[in-house]
Image 1 (cartoon, rainbow, N blue to C red):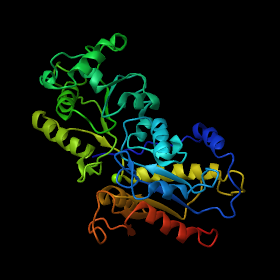
Image 2 (spheres, protein in one colour):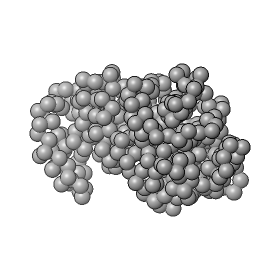
Image 3 (cartoon, rainbow, N blue to C red):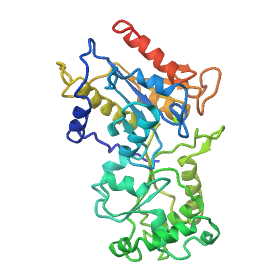
Image 4 (spheres, protein in one colour):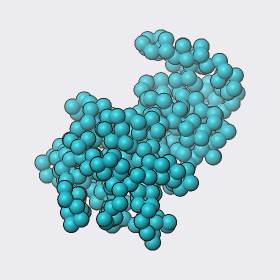
Length: 380
Ligand SMILES: [Mg+2]
């Protein structure tokens, strides 16, 4: 597996938005020297339901007037909808104002590839609105795999047995304009991006094998110039609404890789992003620094321009292999806190990826952090 650290924070794009939002910040007696990164699934939410006292815990990171007091963000391997939409959704579910900048998803690093693929035909795979996510990142010629597959009759020999075959047919009928703009029968797919958890594994594995083996033209000659393939994350399992873990994007990657390598002479080449890659934590640190600078813009900060240096950044997660392992590999200033509300349910610490602290819930984690960091400056 390869990984290229390519995601950058653009100060110019986000400064205005943050200044607008944080313009009513209260004067604060002491600037915190810490930040917090929250995993979402299994820590903040299970499905669409808040868990572990998450709304109350998050509220403590804001002033009474609703403005942000403690720099924090969500660092999730999930996705499928644009960060702006996810921020609105989280704000509604959790009762606090979440900005798009505070939502870092598995696919967020794809933004850094937009220039490279700007005018190339690419396909986006996964639940939700994968093509809309890629368009928001700046990709100009992107089709969802649903739409792309619908142009190739019989590419999925099982489609007639699937209940959503009608939906695909409808998409085909309403996509004439896109079909004219992108001649998928002669224009090669130059990149495939797995944005979020795939829905129809069988169809998606089939179509991806076609695209990747036939150099971007399904049904044509098999070649060896495999188009680049990117995964937003590599989670084997994650905690959703069902009591036990569900198979994640990493499981899909294993299935695709195993099948591709069985039918093709060259092994599958791909790049995976998301936690536990240390670059994801470096990027989160840079974004937290940007949030900090905007929250405390009115105060004299000698490091404000170059980026705030945190003494501690807390990663609160439920998945030892992803959240805790990633924070450990990232090193200073990361401090890992493992909750028992998701993938991990153990009594003691995790054996292979031990956290710096194990708690029952995110509310308990916030209680620990605020008592430790702020007890000398605030009363909580
Ligand atoms: Mg999780």
